[in-house]
Image (cartoon, rainbow, N blue to C red; front, side, top):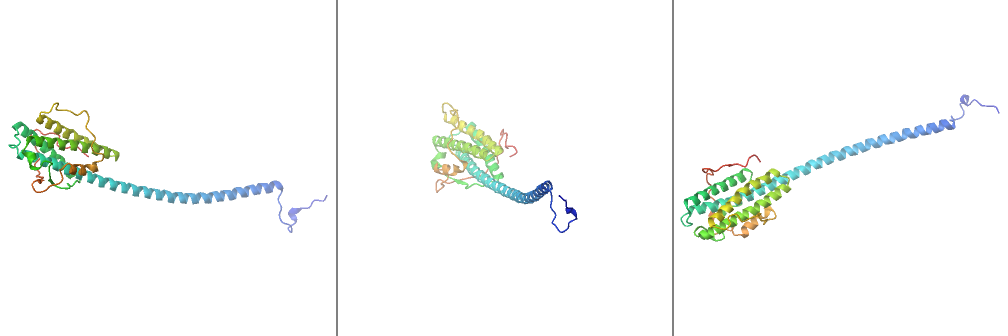
Amino acid sequence: MEKKDLSQDYTRPLELSSDESTSFDSSRRRLLQGAVAATAGLSLAGVAGVSLASALSNTTSVNHTQSQATAGQLKLFFSILATGEALAQTFYSNALAHARDLRLSHEVFTTLGAIRAEEQLHFRLALSEGGTPATTHFSFPHGAATFRNPSLFLQTQQQIEELTSGALLAWINDTASMGLSRVAQLGGQLMQVEGGHRVLGRVLMGADPFADWGFAPVVVEHFSDVPNVVKAAGFLSPRSGNDFELRQIDPRFPGLINTTPGKL
């Protein structure tokens, strides 16, 4: 059979051998696949870039919101603390003012003076951290009789210090849950001192034993619940005849040490 020179026949379309055709198709497919992949890659990169930018923006927004929420919560906590410390300072100030009615010895008078100075230090700390007391006027469950009757005075003193202990346990738990370990530690620093006040009250009462707690009881679930508990106990309802106002003092006192909690 006569062979035709197809390469010289320009009237016929170009035809490839089966091997060449296969190779060309394969190359074309690879080229197309590469182009598609590249296009897809660029698209995905664009989408990923937008998604990443959006995610970073959202994360920044969430972190900012969380930071604002934490700051707001801390302000509330230090405001509650300021109110409680103002109450305690007012209580001890009135006890000292009625030393004769309460038959306080010189030794007891000095001890209560030191306790009052400690409460004033705690109050100032709360203010320095942004706290604002809800009030500076307080009531007591037994009214003015609290400072004329030694038994009622000591009963009220124990009530205040036990409420303070429960409040600070809630402070520690809540601030630790917020990831604020140093602020939680501050609650421990305060609780250590307030626990000493409670024991001193039992010494004055002649209670047996002086130290009677194996563990401090958990009486408040959250620190934000404290105002309602304190009000229910009769300390936040001042009225005529039962209205005691905070009178701030110089907290410097002979022999009083560790007058700051350290850096917060």
